[in-house]
Image (tube, rainbow, N blue to C red):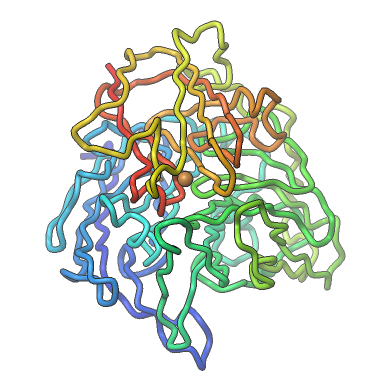
Length: 448
Ligand code: C2O
Ligand code: CU
Ligand code: CU
């Protein structure tokens, strides 16, 4: 079929050296045996077929569970049967073919495991990766380009950030503190602990994905230089926004331009984490990675960030939707009840749908986090929304773009607006603290 690209990915157990000696190798579960898995790049209008082969062992070597899998392409509007919902599981030794249409605005997506009750463990073991789509609009903009390969002329850089806990042996330790949070003291960026990247004195585009199970970050540069937010979960922002720091919860994507021309050759800039409430910080989690400015720009292109990026004209772009178009408001309350993680007082039941939304209806969804102590990054599958307000106030400067995950901090109420389509069928919504999601802060609803 000339209208699609085909990939085979094999989820398997591998041993990789993540920490330097004297730590030993780490057992991971990875797409093609690596973590992060391969970045898939697709073009708008051309489909992708991925055969996901579950070649994992019948039992996790330490935790003892059976690693059934389901692969979710987070950020896509796939047909629901290819969405990778939690109970659509593939057993070890089996495979499933997924079809992705790639007909949305260019964006940074990610694919990760979603197997029922083991999503957090499978993702923690390494089953996560980025997936990028491009389109004509993005090509036409003078933003930094060229997928990063470490060589001059490549200025579009994926950064997948996560935390982890390691034993002295080098093996991962999965400690979710009685099904509440997993807070690691080692930061991995693209699978490498606290890496150093050599940069030129010019602008770079970073596709920052928080792939942590539970940890939120507040990111800032040690130089005090601003960062320019140009994109979100659902693609390029309507307009660039300069910030001194920004907060990111699990599963959010922020595309950020950093201009190293503000620095001199020989200077070092640390990407720092200032921390967020309810995330346990260690001295070691206060830094993410370092950029060493090693030369002047090697190319003549002088990227300038245009003042309009994405007018958001498509029918499913949330940016031009108005609240007056909404046919109803639905409330969703996220709270811990009797030791369980609940949405509107209930835990997930694959046999129960919690809402029926008309195809192409516009609705306001109100996410309420009742009570202190926890953050809930709320994710809705298959749609993009925009944040209307946060506790009645305008959204933060960095989150004014198309999104699919909203970070709902303690005692916060976040209202979002979306058009539900174009697919009919079963959609999921859940907390993307994957420990909460597994136990069982998740629901599904129907569209159409
Ligand atoms: Cu990235 Cu249902 O999740
Ligand atoms: Cu998703
Ligand atoms: Cu949660």
